[in-house]
Length: 234
Image (cartoon, rainbow, N blue to C red; front, side, top):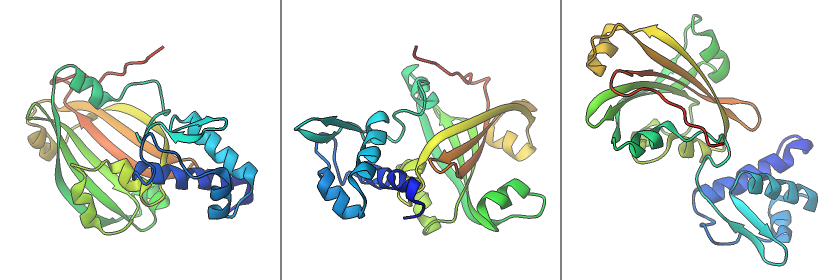
């Protein structure tokens, strides 16, 4: 573990990973504070701060005299009151399916300054196509740190990309999205089966609790098939 003042964050992330991989299933109790102190070799205050973080994020519920119970193993409980876009699409009666087009380890040129600064010389590049009721709808390019074997990424249709990152201690704490209208290259137009020359582009940066960018994705949406929407609960 690194800096003293960040011990509680690292403890919280470790417990969160155990919740996500169902070492601690929903409805069960995590180890006691004393057991966690011994496991992580930290103070009671550090353990209590870590549990407080996870309780605020919606993962745990602490009751006096009854221990601490796992409430959720969803990766994003508290990121925002905004409902996920894919869930909104499905609520409207559409089906979203994912198809992996390519997975490769890429080296960055001097022109790709941001990616090179964030990921170093190399990163995994994952290209996916989302289909809306079978019709091509979103073109995705994900850039990820080089973690483990790239062949594991072939399971991304079944396993959440963010759970994969969390398995390597890269837990997403927040997103930052920016949008622009972009001119679409011909190969992507063909993939999306669209005649539109300009489409909506979303750039997403995913941050850890340490404020480290652990993923950048570029998504191009054919909004003529379904509009991009954000719905907030107030």
